[in-house]
Each structure stands twice: as structure tokens, then as C-alpha cells.
Length: 430
Image (cartoon, rainbow, N blue to C red):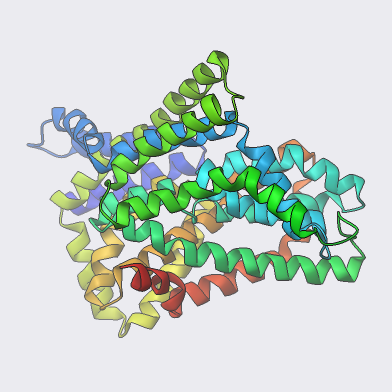
């Protein structure tokens, strides 16, 4: 009887998610159905589990890194990163599109939010690209797909959630994120080069930057670019934990904004604080709701049953990885990435371990899969946010995005089946 009630709760949750009811409401509604229909289970437990789910030391890193990202944006970092990216790639074929990709890669270690990154690029770069002769659809696609890099480059919120859920090192996940992030950056640059050369999209600069121009731009962007290295290095040599690294990042951002660049005043400080609170609340509501649902799954031994079923029907780890990829790609089309991760990781991670799959490699596979969901309809948050700002029709976006979908699926296969892309840098550092 318990399994059937869990199934009903899961169906109700999925239906509400598909109807675009907020994720935390959908998950809580499914959990409430279980507690109401299951005899001898006190309904007070749902409140206890929601509170217990957010009382986690590793999750303290989330508000710190959201705050650091907000203050980095107000500290005058964005313009310096844009200028540096233009100096590095502005002279190559498809210059502004290449700048767009490089900015997303560099800002990934600072903004922490793919939606924030896409919004900035859509407002600042897409109008320039259109004026230079790039189509609006192509500019929008490059902006949305390059923003996928943001959650991969540390410090990503997805890595903090995954590490806390699967009980693996968040520091190692931070280091591992560089592999998929750099792979996707290079792949997108190659794709943009091919398309731009075919269509005759011109560089944004007439010639390569002189050494003096390069070092001048690097000098202005140097301190912000140090942040990911400070975080990774500090965690690696034991100066601070990932949670403490978040607070160090906030102090570093305030140091840049208030003392070095002096572009942040009291108004910007308050605005950054407000963004931190609202961003943290949105994530923690999902975490708390999903914690209640995870308790239900554990009580009914669903992870164990799931593992037994998979092991009995899938003969080797490669078939398992293919099945997981297909499953997550479909799930990512309909469910917000963080919500899907909190629900599915307790099921999938132990099963992957049973097949002998490296925990870091599998983590990167899951995170990359769910990042792809941000550009696939019908949910596709990156797609809708970008198109909403650039006024690009969804039909035109999807038509232009076909080769980019093929590209990210190739990258997904490389990350899934070539461990070096996800664990290579981790093995070097650790």
C-alpha cells in the first residue's frame, strides 16, 4: 500500500510541475498526499523534515555564494570582464559571439547564476551583435547556450546541492567543474567560428590586441579573475571549507566594490543584500520541500527497490549511463534542475556506485544533463529569459539552435564516457 501511495504522490507532484506550479509547492503537495493517506504517520513530520532539510552546514555556502555573485555585479566586475574578453577574442571570426561565450565562462566563477549571466549578455551584448550584422536568433542562441557554462564553473549552486545530497566532497566537485566548463566553452567557440565564417560575421576588432592592450585589460580584470582560484586554492590547502569559502568570497567582493574599484555605495550594498535573501529563499524552499519527499522515499525503501530493479535489468554500467542520460534529458525538459536533482540524486547516486562508476564523474554527468534542460522546451528557462529580453521568437530560436543541440549532446557523451573530462583536473589537484 505504501508504494502505491508514493506513486500517487509522485504523479501529483509531476502534474503540478508540468502545470508550472512553483516547484516547492508541487513537491510539498505530493508529500502532503502521502502523509494524509498513510495511516500511523503523524502529519507533523512533514514540517519537521522541511526544517531539518535546510539545517545543513554545507548548504550555508549557498547564501554566501549568491551574495558574492550579487556584490561582484555591483562592484564593477562585469564591464572589466567584457573588456578583457573582447581583447582576447574580439579579433577572431565571429568576434562578438566569441566574446559572449568567453564572458559566460569567466563570469561563471562569479555570477553563479545562469539566468543572471544570460540576462546580462542579452542586454549588453546581443544589441551590439545585431548592430554588427549578426541575426537576432543566432545572437540569442549563443547567449542562452553559453550560459549553460555558468553552473559548471565553480562555485556552482548545483555542485553544493549535489555534494550535500550524495555526501561527496564539494571541493572536488568545484575542481571537477572546470573540465566540462572548458570543454563546452571550446566546443561552442568552434561551432560559432564555423557558422560565422560561413555567414560572413565579422570580428569586433580589426586586429589582434597589442601586448600593452592585453596586459592593460588583464590588469583591470585580474582581481575578479582570481576569485575562482582563491576559492579552489583555499579549499585545497585547507585554509577554509567550501562553506567558509563562500563567506570569504563575499568579503572579497565587498573589498573590490568598496575599496579597490569604489563603485559600490550603500544603495548597491542594500540591493545586493536583497538579491541574496530572495535568491536564497527560492532555493531553500525547494530544498526543504524536497527533503520531506526524500524522507518518504527513504521510509518506503524506494532507493533500494530502484537499485535492485536497475541492477536486475541493466547488465553493465555503460547501458546504465545511457539510460540515465536519456531519463535526465527528458526530466530536464519538464522540471527545474535543482528540484530534479534533490529528488533524483538519492536514487541515482547509490545505483551508480553499485556499478563502480566514479562518484565525481557521475556527478558531472547529472549536473551537465540538468543544465541542458535550461535550453530545451517546454520549460527551458534560459531560452525564455533570453528570448524575452531580445524579443526573439521561440520558433526562430529553436530553428537556429539545432546544431547547438547536437553539439551539447556530443559534449554530454564525452563527459559521460571519457572520465578525463570530469576527473582529470581533480586527479591532478588532489
